Every structure is written in C-alpha cells, then in structure tokens.
Length: 452
Ligand SMILES: [Zn+2]
Image (cartoon, rainbow, N blue to C red):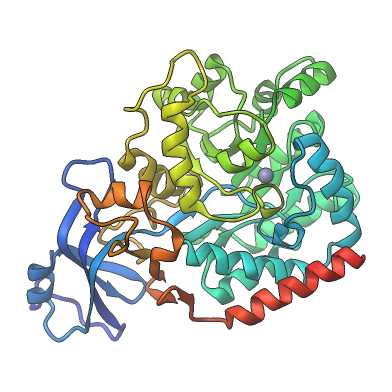
C-alpha cells in the first residue's frame, strides 16, 4: 500500500470512510470482515482499504467520515430487471406468467412512451439506490432515456435494445436490428459500462432471428440477456414448437457463452446446469418474481455445485412489486435451505450468509463482466459502497455483520451509498433528486395509465 510519501500528486477529492466493519474482497474468503476498517476514496476509485489506524496514519489530513455500528459492504448488483415497469406495479397481481404477460404486454403496447420510461426508471433508480444497489442490468425499451434518468439519480444501469418482434417496440424486425446495431456502435464498452442485447426469450424470438442476434453480439463487446426456462410451460411450449428445449435453441444459435446472462433458469435440468457452467454463462436468480408467479424454485444449490455464476435479480415491479434486492438476498439464503429444488432435501448449511452476499455483489459483477471495476471493496475498484446501520433492534447484538445484513437487515438500514465515489444516498435519502417529486410523478403516471 502506498504511504503518504510516495503517493502520486492528484487534484482529485479524497475522503476516508471508516466503519466498525468493512467487508473486503470476496465475502466468502477467510478474513474478509475487517473490524474498525477504513476505505480511502480518491476520485471515483478505492485508493486504499485496511485497518482504520493504518489508513488514517498513512493519509493524514484527509477528511474522515466515521460510521459507528455500520458495516460497509460492496454496492449490490441487480442482475435482472425491467426498471420502468414500476409504472405497471399492481396491474397483474396473483396470476401466473402466461396470464401476467397477457395483461401486461398489451398494456405496454398501448402506453409506452419515452416520457413514461423516464418517469418509471427514475423511480426505480431511487428505490434501488436506497436499497443498496449501485449497478443494475435492465431490459426495457427507450433505453437511452431510461439510462439517463437513472444516471441523474446516481444509479449505474447497463442496458440496450430489447429484441422482440411485435412487442411494444413498433419497429419492424429489420429496423429493430439496425437500431440495435447502431446502439452497440454508439455505446461501446467503457469501464463498468457494457452495452446489452436483450433477446426476450426463445418463445418470443425465432431461431433465425436469434441467429441474427448472435451475429450482432459477436461483432461487439456486449452482454446478452435472455429469459430462459422461467416456467415448465415455457419449456413445453418451446419443445412442442421447435422440437428442442430453450437452452438447446439458445446454444444452437451460438448465444450460450461467457457474456450471456440467463434470467430465471428455474427449470434447467442437471445436464443443462452443467452446460451453462461449461459455457461460462451466468444465471440471474429472481426468487421473489418466481414465487409470486408460481414459476417454481430455481435449482440454485445445483447451479452453484456445477460451477455456474449465480447472481440475484429483482425482475420488474409489475411481477415482483418492489425492487428490494436486500429482500431477494434474504429470501435466497432462506429458500434454498428449507425448500431446495432438485434431488437433495432441506439443508441448513446450504447458502451460508457470505455465499448469498457474494451472489448479490461479486457474483452479479462477474455475471455482467464488470468485476474488474465493481462487486467488491478492493483497492483499484470503483468506490461503490453501501453503509448499513446495524445499531437496530433487528440486528443487534452483532456477532457476524454479514449474517446481520443477510438475515436481519432491511433497506431502511441502508444509510449511505456511494457510486463511483459519488454520494448517491445520505441519511437514507437520495441526494440528487427530490424523492417526493419522483414518487409523485410515478403516481400521476399510474393514474393516467389506469384512465388510459
Ligand atoms: Zn424479466
């Protein structure tokens, strides 16, 4: 670590965040919880992390923010979402996926505008940041507008064209592909940003269309995200229509690879789990959405055992109702102990707290291919930091701060959030927007859509 004497001269602002606990590096590695730790932030990056006494001594004169009884964890990564769908919250509750889509897709087709996406995404960004999320993958429409609205609030959103013929995008197929190609060319990868191609699913995009998507993806550094094997009915529908299961269709198109994020993967069989692992693809696990739509329980212990990177996602607020990734984290840790899918029975040792936290942070960053830049608190990475106040009836006395976050904390305990060194949340509130205005705009939009 650089001492005061050999530090490079810089005009960038520096600050030290000191907390009673800092989760350093991979949460599952030994010694990852540092007591009385400190993080030196210079500009947008973490310049040093270590015991507070050492960091303070090495960097005299740098302002220190002291966070007693707080744990500093990496900013969480939301690996599957439809952010602007906050506007459709509550429109299709208590239905399965097919009935849900039958309600929501026509509603989207009637009502989708740039302005609506802006309002819906801005509110989603406020909700996610206040819940400790600093990066989110998104699959939606009018993505340039959505990404900008989220950035104004302070949230990093990785997004790009959603590919679905006859969806709310009114573009004919060829125009849609030209639009996608232009987007990828105009928004190339840069640091923690990677553009995204989002073929909706193997039941909504044909095999020949998937071939075109694969050719486009192959020409760019981008993420490919797709809904896959979300329900058993989807598997059956694709099998009947195409004679193959969804993963086979994806694989045949050349879209199963290390840049692929499979949303849900609830009904992947054991052989498919091994193939996903061998391909280096990731699964975005969205248990709140999966349970609410009665889609089933994803085989997460099996996926992890096979070596698949499993990340966590909220899915959209139309199906999951809120965008609470901390709640998703807790549910994940509980669900796969008490009600695991697959051949093995309940096992309380499944998904220890640190394993679950890794899925919400480093696992998400690996899934998105941005783990060189975020996903853990390490020197050189972006300062994506979340301070959780554990001095709370739900978490004291603190024995293990990681277990306290996973099993006890709620998002009201998220007090401060930094994204690339910039403060986005202070005292539990977003600092870059007036939250009341954001929520009022979403409420007005909801009223308007109801009158529609
Ligand atoms: Zn989805």
